[in-house]
Image (tube, helix red, strand yellow):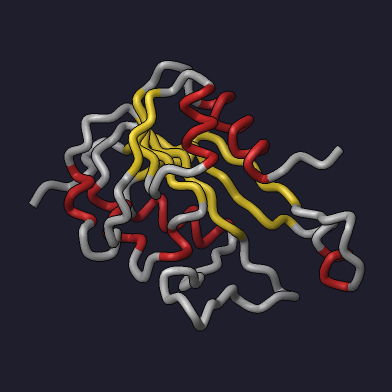
Length: 176
């Protein structure tokens, strides 16, 4: 049986972060944040703020962990919010850039576009330059056995998602 990306995300979170921890989940409440609550985490979600503009608000969260599941690809400048986050730990996932598929774009909704599709080295560098040390990671594929064609076939062999568990490095976030 093929596990969904949500199942894989929750499995990674459970391995990395002990239950009972306080989590700020970047994004409005959704099925994933509800599942995290059901797993024993104390989860608070953002309220739909524009993280490109309102990023300073996340410099004093008072939480144990920040999660960002498939959020950073939607931001024009993920560097800003990553730089100011003050939580000691971060768990984040991003879709990986696929050489055989175009960047996801929605002409009807500017918030539902991918401004970035990362390769893992790019995302690692973003984490490092914003003061995060990666301590664990996983990649996974996203095959869909119901679809036929070249692209669906390639999804059986090409990693599609990347998830990291990071710790805040000493001296970060930098205070002005």
